[in-house]
Length: 544
Image 1 (cartoon, rainbow, N blue to C red):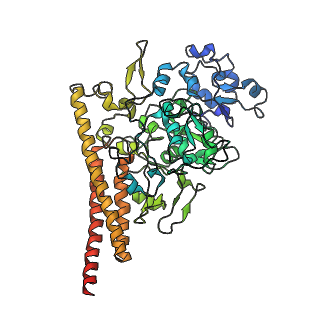
Image 2: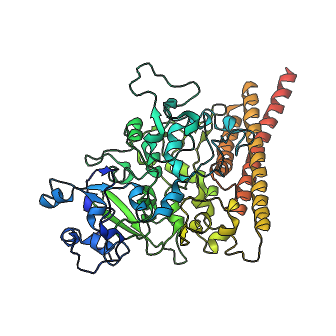
Image 3: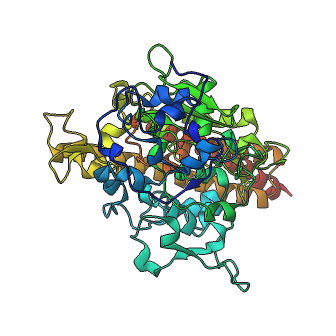
């Protein structure tokens, strides 16, 4: 049991993070230390008993505190005046975990090369019509992997007018690593710079917190403003971006003191702490100890056993992070409101009801005026309750399979593979009687079937929009238009969940079928309401 509800890098409460990497001490390669530390740790433990509870007798027990914390001597001389500095660069972990580090940053040429979803061969060919006028219509790409999380967010055309570009032009697109070694700011020092044509000025600090660990000591729990916090939900997005140099780090999922599996994403911790049951076991509980430090300034959740469903759900969930509006009144919801850092932890069939309950939507459709929710990437919710989930399979078993390193030792790949391209490692360990060809055919059958339903859902949403415009031109009554608009809101969520979710239905085929079928049916019902009203309007006009 941990004492005093401490957490994270408690030894550096209030410290700034830096990206320089000192040489590891000899302790880094040593075996776990004895209970009595003679390298200065004992002195640290006099104030940080909670760290001792995490660290001693763990795999990191032998590491001196100075391995991960700089300016320790000054801190020891005057702890209140001199805060130590925490090193959070993944390259520090790579000193001992080289193969995991290299697999994380290896460019994956199996994924799509900067492929927009809203193209004929993309995941959502009718995206521009269905999401108009939302910023994602300017550029919304299929994923390229974790090493590119920050780079791809900053370089996309919907982010800050296209001011951030690759330093080496298109030749730089395959480079991963530190953000500002790869990208450049075209607006910096250029008073003549203007946003590029066909770009948007989107972006927000909350979204960045999923994609990087750089701000873990600079961001208060849930992103509230605080004198102790450098950044908040309300911070200038360009300033936050320029202070973001690394993709999501090791410390997002691994406690640096004792190597325990953990989560740090504030709103996920908040929802689980409040009773969200998405990851609960048969007893209705989750294996997560929520630990607070600095009077609630930050929290982490520590697990006894690895649960990659929760670890991956730090990012792979539906969440609200941008400004929005309240249903009915259209009143704006700004970044000062906690609804701009919210994870519903709700399945697709109940999602719209949830957002109506908290009174938040993202944008109005430019044709129908429907109050629409913009979906993100709800892999965790989709997977919950699926066949694989009920069988006890976790995300890492399929997406981070064991692989043999250069020295012959097995390690978990941190490149996060697509199982379809690694069936031998990802699937056949459980499906021992199947062949690679058989499994690939099954996967592609699910994916192609789901994509077919997605296309049909998009077609009927398009028909709804076109018929709404026609009905409006004919002067159909506002009551009828309201009915169609409400159904548009319902059909939209039931469709867009699946273009935002990255498995094309494979994570939960039956849920995909149910949701997309409901979207099609709802759109068809709206089309009938509108076409019937237009038929009546034509008859009335003919009588005149």
